[in-house]
Image: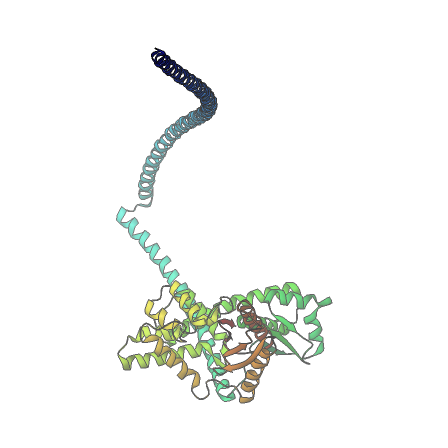
Length: 520
């Protein structure tokens, strides 16, 4: 019994323990579930807060973006309104302008219509007057015929006879003028024959490149040339463009100028003033103007005679005038116009031997040095300058290239350039054509090299091509490329100011580059 009781008590204890364990487990589970529920509630609350924060941020960003878009739209609308207002203003101005132009056009059309009506009235009146004149002329002719008792044929014959007499009178005057002109030309040719004879007898002569000397018979004429306080000599220099040196040589007056035509005008004017004895500014201007006019005629005559001597047809008046100016230019005592005619004849002979057009060859030979007539006015080699000049006056490309290439300034296209170069050399080098003493030549070469060596930075100088080119070698560390150009120009200016020489001198400065300058 006791065992049963013990067993029953143990069973009850085990049951109570099991129930207690179950209750404890259930309580723990409920507690865990409550904790999980609280945690879930906390997470849910946090998520709700984050969602509300994100919603607020998005709402704020959307609001700001909406404000920006509204501002942009307002700005765009404002700009559009301004642009539309500007377009409306322009359209209004254009409409106003069109209205004003239309008004002017209508007024101009009205004026033209009135002018046309007036012109029509004038034309009608003119036609009426013309018809009246025709009728009056007819009536006058009939009255004259009735008064003179002449038929129309007899009146016409009498009228033609009067015209014939007037034509014979004009022909007589023209014949007299031709005879007077021929007489004057004959006298000029006679003086030329005497001058040529004197020149041939004189032999070699030294030509003054820039001066002309006039002998004076006493000191009193020198005082009259100077004038009170030098007014006469100033008037003469202003009128002629030359420099008068009256105290350098006793018993003579020296005229200095680079332009030979001006120097010739000044010489002739001074001779006439001395012979006349009346020397004052007004008389000086009259004499210089008259001599200048005569000199222009002489230049044209010299050019025409040169063309005729070369056996060529008449040329352009501008070319003829430049050829005449060559008569007053010399190279080593050789007259350039005579030299040009001689080259033309040599060209004709060589062209005939080679089967080339003789007339074209003679033209190239005659015009080969025409650039020297304007070389003091235009920069560049005289061959190129002359070629451009004759090209403007209508010469053919063959002649132009022959002139331009005779000193190898441009490459020759045909044989004319080579032939002109050969004929030029033959004419210049023949015995008695040109003269220069060896002493003068050596002195000129020495002076060229001395001028070149006088500039700082120059290493050495050499005068080559018979003194027609000066080659200057500079020190690279002392003269750069920019200064080389200035050095070439400075040497050229120094040579132009200190030396007298025929033709041109080329200055070549040699460093890493070559800079070329021409002294004229």
